Image (cartoon, rainbow, N blue to C red; front, side):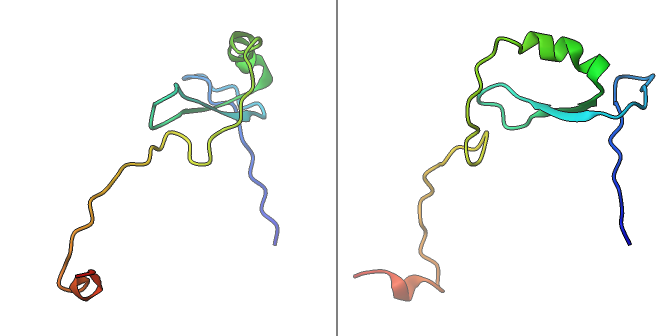
Amino acid sequence: MAVETARVCDFGQGSCKQPASAYRVWRDGDRQALAIDLCEQHAGPLLAAVEGAQQVDLPAKPRERMTVTPLRTTSRTARLKKR
């Protein structure tokens, strides 16, 4: 059995129900992106705003930063600690 997913325009209250593309937009440093599905007509202002933008590769894990976490010895890991 085959299943087909249809993506429709999600433009405000009066969604136009036209075939759409998914867009994800975020500012550098944000932890979450804004997601919206727009048809070609409603995506026009968004595409015009980014028309002159430079394309860059996405990081492997966008919006995530590596942090140092201190290791704590527990009763289960005490035997592994160097003395």
